[in-house]
Image (cartoon, rainbow, N blue to C red; front, side, top):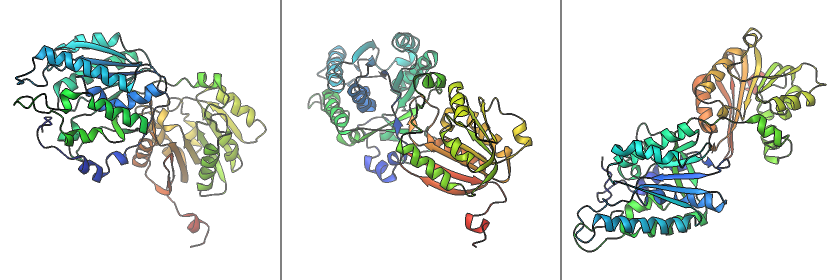
Length: 448
């Protein structure tokens, strides 16, 4: 494999025909508060994250771009440019590109040796520690890009993000050139879609890196580095990132302290419609025992209680539990408990199995192996023929462990049983599973 753009690489059409980007879940940048982009060389910041930089700037968010080297080694055989002169020119280019993407952004030039960042990783980590704070979003080059400087930047950014409890995303650059669609063992990826202003700003900013997208001169050694076929991968209306950091903790109690209904479960038509679809997907009109994991203030719980002889609802947030209890205080057979699952999963739930378990908009908050454990425990807590319902927002929310598509992949792999319902929209995925014995609604009601 090669990361030399002077050599023939995989054309952008091959990736597009394979539908790679189109198949990725979108990135939900709602939680973005401050963006730190760490580039190995001038132009990396624009190629890998120019659209995201423009997006953050358009929202009025603070942006810092840290460039580790000045790119003085990009044309080692140039007869017309010295290394120092090229470094100075590339610094001017990155400043101009950043001014186009985010005029108020802060540019930090570390001026480390181009091509030797692996030997400077300790110093790079130290420099980044002074730039990154808790809950920042850090975007770096990708450690698998087959370029040692890109790998060193990724490792340093990952170490700093871990220490600072920041979100870390890695963005490929050379993957598109040497890689092929269907390549094995690519990390879980998400897609950030660029609107027209962000895409226009990115395209303009790429053109401002003239030493990389145009020949330095007609002489041998001054050839263009990023030929049109290589640049085509970065002129698309999306960017691809690999979320690599651990999920950030979510302050649910803090959210309920500022709003009684942080997600708008009661008032938003989106939530009302989704809830109606979930309830309509249930294969039976009534259930003996129901468990709802993550009940929030009890909006869906109230509807489930209409179809349950007994219902247990749980949530991790004390304020949510208080609201749900108040909403359901006159409903017989309903119990609302504050529990952090899977750690506080009661043994009694296995002794008294449930006929229905609902896991809605919760799975992406179960980081690491917690989701695996909750799915396994749910499967074990269901009675024969029991029903498991999962419904989740599909985009990958910045700072969480995974998006809805990834949550449902885990559920399908671990739960087994029969899938009765699969409903997929751009926004959410809804699936209904049943343990053995299972049957379709028509078969269960004697219609076939």
